[in-house]
Amino acid sequence: MGEARRKFTRQYKADAVQLYQDSGLTMGQVAQQLEIGESTLQSWVKNVKDEGDVAAGETPLTQAEKKRIRDLEAELRRVNMENAFLKKGVPRTLEAA
Image 1 (cartoon, rainbow, N blue to C red):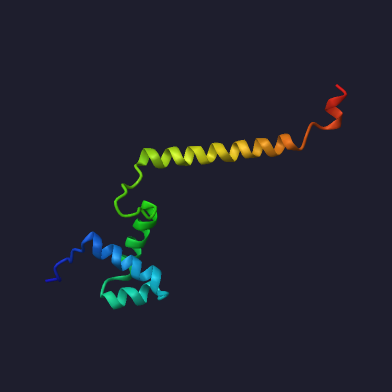
Image 2 (image 1 turned 45 degrees about the horizontal axis):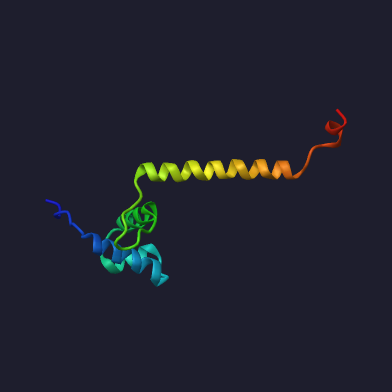
């Protein structure tokens, strides 16, 4: 029979990700030191990035908040493009009309 599946606490996962980010070692080297699979560490790192590196004591953003941020960023890009267009001014051919 196979080995029992190991369970890791949130703190252990956070510490493992922190070790990877601070050590300058490759993901494979850190995973080997911790005796975990590289894909396991990779998924933990991805989860931290997806959560936006939530500081201790803060709650992660909800899906609705993330969508609102994406929508606002898209609107900001659109407005910036409009401003850039308007700054160029009206072409001379249209002024005479």
